[in-house]
Image 1 (cartoon, rainbow, N blue to C red):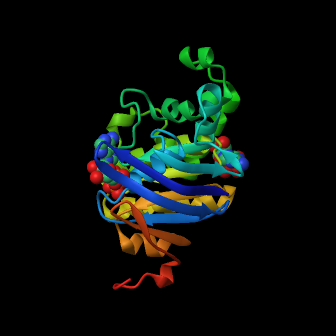
Image 2: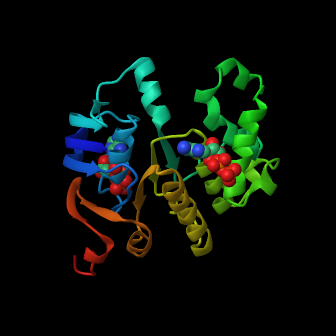
Length: 236
Ligand code: ADP
Ligand code: ADP
C-alpha cells in the first residue's frame, strides 16, 4: 500500500500541494485528474522523491520513504518507475538499448556503460517490446519513432525495471486517439498481468473513466474528489 499522509509542498510562495491524504492499494489502477496546475505532477514526483514534500509523510508498505537518502533512495526509486509526457528516451540510442536502461538496477553499472548486457537482460527487454507489439523496432533509433511508439518503449523500459509502482505523468497528453488507446492498454496490461500498481495523471475525464479503477480529483493543490469511475458525473 502506498500512503500519503498530510503531504504538502510549496515552491516559494506557491502552494503546489496542500495536505493530501491518499491510500492506494497494491495492484490498483488509479487516475489522478484535474486541470493544469492542480498539483498532480508534484504529487507523483514526491512519491518517487524527484521532489521532496515540505511536510507530511509518504509510506510504502509501512516504510517511510519521505526522508530516504543515498543508496536507500536509489533503491526506492528502482521500485517506482516514472513515465513522462515527453517519453525521456535517449533519442540517438536504439530502442532495445533504451529498454535495457530499465535493467540498470539489475546489472553492475560498468557492464551497462560498456554495453555488456547479458543475454538474459536482452531477452527480457525484447520480451517487453513484444508485449507492446514493437519488437520489430528494437534496432531503430528511438528518435525515429512516433510519439505513441516512443511511449510504449518508455513503458517497456519501466516494466523491465520490475517495479512495484508505475507513476505515469500525463503519458498520453501529446498523443492522438489511437496511440492514446495503445498506451493506456499497455499500462492496463502491466497492471493486470503483473499486479504492478499504476498511478496515472490524466487530463481526459473520458479516458480516466474508461481505464481507471478509482479516481482522485485535484484542484488548487488539494484532493477534491475520490471515487470510482461511475461516481464521476459531469457535475461532480
Ligand atoms: P499539474 O501536474 O496538475 O499541472 P503541477 O504539480 O505541475 O500541477 O503544479 C502545481 C503548481 O506548482 C503550479 O502552480 C506550478 O506552477 C507549481 N510548480 C510545480 N513545480 C514547480 C517548480 N519546480 N517550481 C515552482 N513552481 C512549481
Ligand atoms: P512472456 O511470457 O510474454 O515472455 P514474461 O512473463 O516472460 O512474458 O515477461 C515479459 C516481461 O515482463 C519481461 O520484460 C520481464 O522483465 C517482465 N516481467 C516478468 N515478470 C515480472 C514481474 N513480476 N514484475 C515486473 N515485470 C516482470
